[in-house]
Image 1 (cartoon, rainbow, N blue to C red):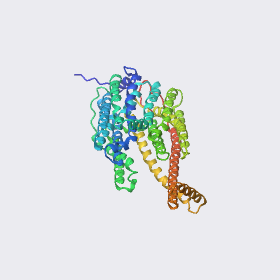
Image 2: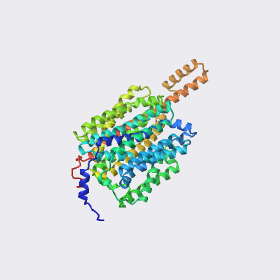
Image 3: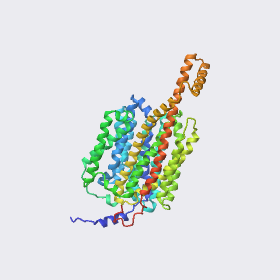
Image 4: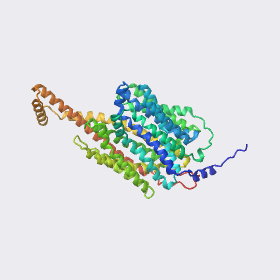
Length: 535
């Protein structure tokens, strides 16, 4: 049989000329449904942890493994998705991922013990890990350059809005029905996504009939050890007092060594799991750096504002979700607007505007206090979501604008992984900053709350009189008054620590704006993509 060999120029031309046989908007809707399901599930289980722990007779610490196990499996699959897609095809991998995620969701719902639930969550993380970069790569390849901004706006609606509505939806389902239904609702969505992807998605020519790529077992093993140990350190470090625990030190050392070994292996391998050389592209390298920092910013606000509302203001999970829900509305509005502007304005200007709005609203949150109303939280949240929505589309377009189509799948895995790592590092760092900052402020406030001071004496006497009127004797009333003063001092110290964190997010937003200067102006991919992009 005669073997037909195509030249690189012929292959590149066929890739550039390829268009999907169905409307790219149908394909975009199909992959967006699957992505929305996965991103939503990454946050919807958070508010149900106490219910899960109680129902399965587990401690609160044990229940957090429901989140940790999912994140570890998800992190390992993110960068590997591009390599697996080159081996078995992107459409086939997406279908297998949706199927695994849906089946795992059912197993989560029927779990009878905590170990069974954790195993099911690991399978769910494996299925969900590949969907986000696969969906992003499919959308970038299916649309012509002039429509990619609108496509990324549609994609961004799911990835930005889903984490916002997740806690609210999870709280409502858990309170109204059972925690098991936060997993069961994935069944109809998963089945619909399977049908739509099978009908409306197809692989580009360079992913069809591809010879099998050797499996880099060593590279995959090093990556799994690096990401797994790092995620465990970030998730459990605060509970173990960070480097005060020897096992945290050993895991950190293991993560660093495995990361360096992984980088060396991937750079030397002919068929690496992750093509790290793509980071030589100037715009992609800059985009990866900014998206990692923006992951810290985004998860910092979305994780800590509900925590502030629940722990210090006494909001229920539902009320705190309602207070932050305007963020989703702001993000959706921003996606609609930026989708129309992305081809008319320099994306660097749009990105700077989004980061500026995000930073200013973070600065507004630094003025929070114990008397803040829900309306005073809702408006800054709306504007914060609007700024965040303005970041996603231009940042993705700038980062991917000078890559060839063949590089997009691998690049999407790296891009999404770094954003998730940035979010994990951000939550861990801000949690440590919050706890230690509260201790510092408490020490400062306590030093100024002297027994003989005029203010403290006046407050103590007023509270003592109040408790005495309530029926307590003089000694008990004074003890209750001192306890109330101490509790108020602790709450005020926590508020000041939250304010410090939000102020830090403002400074990081300014740093991200400065990093935009490293971007070169993106050029739409030329009709002939055989020419390598400028670095």
